[in-house]
Image 1 (cartoon, rainbow, N blue to C red):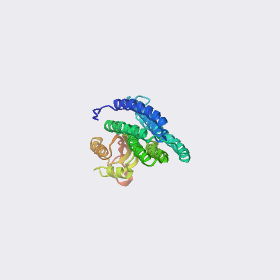
Image 2: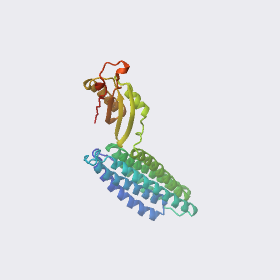
Image 3: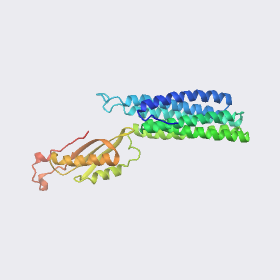
Image 4: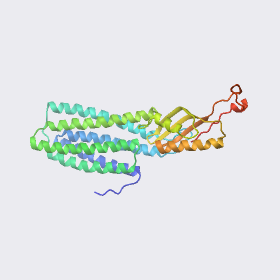
Length: 308
């Protein structure tokens, strides 16, 4: 199969939604006919993916809206909230699968393994294609959460094929329930990972993969920087990072300090992908008692420069 969709996340998400909905219907019908909890678990897994894709589509719309006087950062957090809601739903689905699998292990049911295998094979192709489309369309936490689900689905449907083959060979129908537990564990693992990342963004924690100490050290190495304090780094959206800090410099004119500001911003963008900065320059107050010849009136003036 050749994929020619490279463009907007909106188009990719709409295509993915339609295909996923059709596959959910197929899974439910085939799962009931084959008495396979693994297929029904896959339907639940794909239903959560359908929700993920729908939420992602809504989030992409909100994220594209411009900032306003009341939403000065725009709607970047819409995608983060969508990912959090989606991940929470995944956790709930996984516990339901565990409950059903436990009941099935106590009372195994006859499973039509050949139906399992054919439907799962169709799922591997579908989920693989959707995962490829999402991978090419973007990398923020919202799209990445939907992508992670599709990759997980591809692996779990491949496991269902292997399980169906094992049932055909051995007639051990409990394999279906064990597969369901494995699928549930996969859903739970991916869900917790996204919950952790989205909560970190919403609580304005240091972005994933960044160390505050390294950022501070990078700023200090810029020529003209004497000290760094009141340093804060957070994420506005999953791929939009912000920083604010106070930097102590020598008592120099703003025209000279502009070079320091430019160098700091370039370093932050190049090394840490931090593109939204608010930097305040300060110099030590100079008093005549310390032998300073600068008048007190001038010494009380602090240079403040903000970059946006």
